[in-house]
Picture (tube, rainbow, N blue to C red):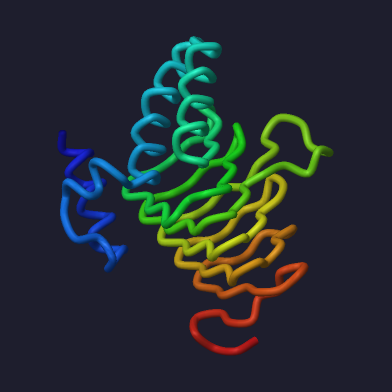
Length: 174
């Protein structure tokens, strides 16, 4: 119950359009996606791969958010809107991350083992960002809308563009 309360508070903190807790409980796709992921991930960790995938697929059908049950997600993830988000099997997401619609944490098709990105703590992934491959997005980093990130981004940075380039580090222009 503590985690559910924390999830609700995270949504209220990050989404000024939310008017009430019942609104979150009854209509918020990011909330459902995270709850279903926890269940699917727990099964996946116990080698119940098919059961985990079935729950993940049901969640995708219900929410439009695809999270592989093998993905590791930290606390207080906020998914805004959510439609079209894809999070791959070996992706790892830290605490206090904000993800907007259309984001992909995917592979390149060339890697073995760890194929998906690692996202640090307190990271903002704007709409339609594509983070591809076994790279790392550092803590306290912002990635601008529609960026395609193919190389690791250091902590305390802002990156934009296709391919993404760091334009700020520690709030100073690069």
